[in-house]
Picture 1 (cartoon, rainbow, N blue to C red):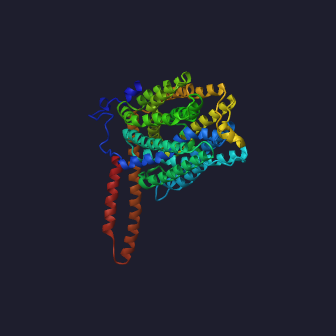
Picture 2: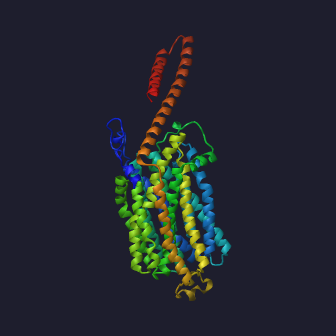
Picture 3: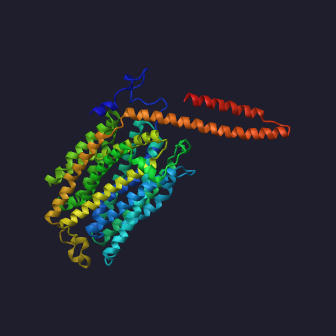
Length: 544
């Protein structure tokens, strides 16, 4: 708890002159307009919609509707994870070097949104029964790769915009809360609409139509949300204020992975969302086979997502009052203790209770790492003079995808090893008409595996996340000092840049003045004004 106390210690005690408390804001602080915060939430909803719907439904859909084997589904996840690990940082690297009249980040939002929507729609389309397992594997692998790349191109930009929009320590936390809160609200609405559409159709061939309709609706939404963020967000960072040194891709990676604070944030983010993804992946199978009531799923989702949304203002208040670490200590400990209960008790009421309790804290594993990462980027700029939001958030997105990959692949390989049996009601081939009324059951070992995956496993990952939060080295005071140095260096480069421009203008005027003297005219007055301006710039540089 010492670090929490340090984060809220007034700087007046150590300042040579009267100063404001550490939690006071700079006189130059300008809060972000609500339009910007809302637009960032719309952008976040692209990943939130994908994460919530696919997290709760896609694994069961691929197993029980698309009728892929657990090994095939697990292999798809591993291939997508490898591609993400190799490609996502490269997207961040390219984003940092993008130079257009729209900025660095916004063009990616414009051009990636439509392909993402198309691939999302594609994955919710089933193939004819006579298509081989290899053909099914290839089709769903292609669709999933397209979604993975599209989500990267969107989410890296949304994440990288956070440190560019504001440098204020507390405003970044507030922006993360608004962004994730709005994204989660839209994600909750999305998963309920998806579930309602699917439930409106029967479990036979018409059920496939429900998945297809829901896929089309949310494919359109992802495209629209990406474009809306492109229109409403304006980038403010001036690329001319970076140092002139251009680092290569691998040099940038070396600096990123030498940043201890970044590695700790990555560990926090890897552990928390991995735990959440494991719960999401197994929830539908758990309520169907352990609680024997698949209709519980909608209620559990409402409990989890609804409690998360209701508690967002509370967590914002906790973060503002006691700091980011204290916020994670509280939320992470609750999550660490809640989920293991599901292993020991199979009651429906216990499942509902755990859903509500866990839902109150489920946003914490996402809000805190996202609000910590901009602080890491500021420290990197202080040391290197470069803004590398893209490559940092690129790796951040990689680890989110790797966490989902591990959850999906590990779940499916474990279920396959335990003896998972495809449901007779949907995967019995030509005998589906006779099998539709037969109950779907699983061996006892599969049931115990599901209980273990949704209980002790996520509890362990949340315990690891709390430990890594304790290790995070950047306090509020350190961040404020980093910000001061970054702004000072930017101002210095701005003066140098202005002086270079004035030198260039003066040279042009001198040439024009010489030509004017030859023609009997002069431009001495303009030259004197430029020289006076340059003198003022020199004084400004000395002052810095």
